[in-house]
Image (cartoon, rainbow, N blue to C red; front, side, top):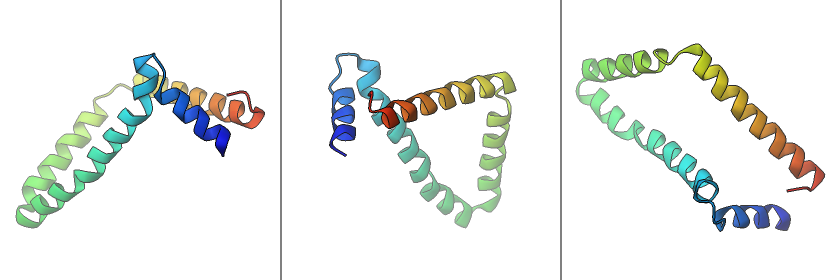
Length: 93
C-alpha cells in the first residue's frame, strides 16, 4: 500500500505537467459526465422530447468518431493498463 501511494505522490509531484495532471484530469471528466445526469434528469422531467433530442445528438456525435480512432484509443489504453499492472505486480514502478 505504501508503495502504491508513493507512486501516486511521485506522479502528482512530477515536473512533467502531462504526468502530474493525467489522473486528476481523467477524474474531472468522469465527474462532469456523472454530474451531467442531474440536469438531464430535470430536462427529461420537464420536457422529455428535448432530452430525447439531446440524447440522439450525443449518440450521433459518438457514432461519428471513426472506428480506427476508437481502436487506436483502446489499444493504447489497454497497453498502458497492462504495462502498469505488470509493473505493479513486479514491484518495478
